[in-house]
Length: 75
Image 1 (cartoon, rainbow, N blue to C red):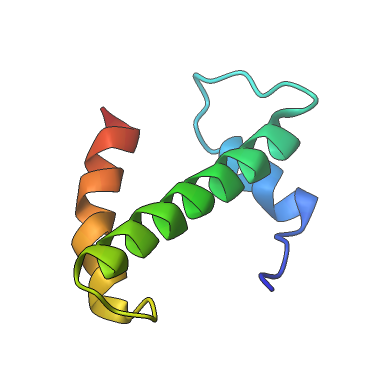
Image 2: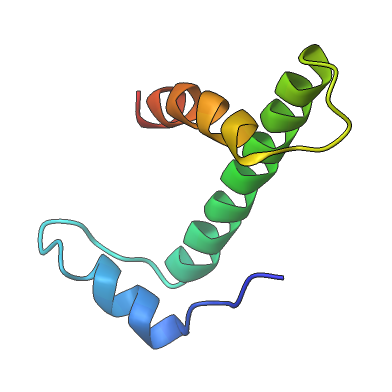
């Protein structure tokens, strides 16, 4: 299980961008966004492992789909 980032750390990282206003629920939204990204990464890695007829998800499955997902998440 992943450890949660303290709210104060998350808010200070988000406030470094002076031109962006940070709302009251921004920390929760950022955490949910990370969880959603990790879920989609796991789904895609599972699909990639299934295509290669592997019973387990291995590191190279995650690396293969991470580039595609990061491009889609940024763009």
